[in-house]
Length: 226
Image (cartoon, rainbow, N blue to C red; front, side, top):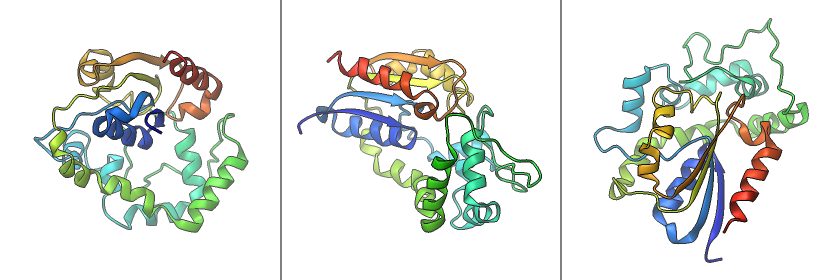
């Protein structure tokens, strides 16, 4: 396959941006959900920058010490933690207090949203109970290493056609400075072939699950234009 249509969300979106950055010749177009392109800032490592802007309780900062957040997840249980994450509508930046990282109260049940079934929850929780969360958390722990290794791409634009879709309640989009970046021209400067930005009203972070049919239509419409 010489070229692909790329679709990605959140972590996948970051990896997708890297693919577009490294090998634009292999990507025909990119539908990106939730996380816009964030150009490398050579002045400061990402985790240090996040700690400076958002404090030690910012979730990525809290994830850095191996074993610590894993122990907190184990205390509350994978099912409860996943339910809390999936159902959250709290605007960003996501912070995790040291006394109760996920805000879980044993006497207060958490209700799953209508678009996420108990069967789905059971599937994810069982997988994490078998393998643990360390593999996933290590993704965050590699942020600074990725930053070091991508030094040659500093100030490089992403030059593939892009459609970006985000919910207006997404914790990424509601993190201070993000709306201004996405809508104010800087995003278009860094990804000059940005074709369209879609802000979906009343939608949170898990946009591809919450509004699956609409997202599928957006993807299909964009792909068929090529």
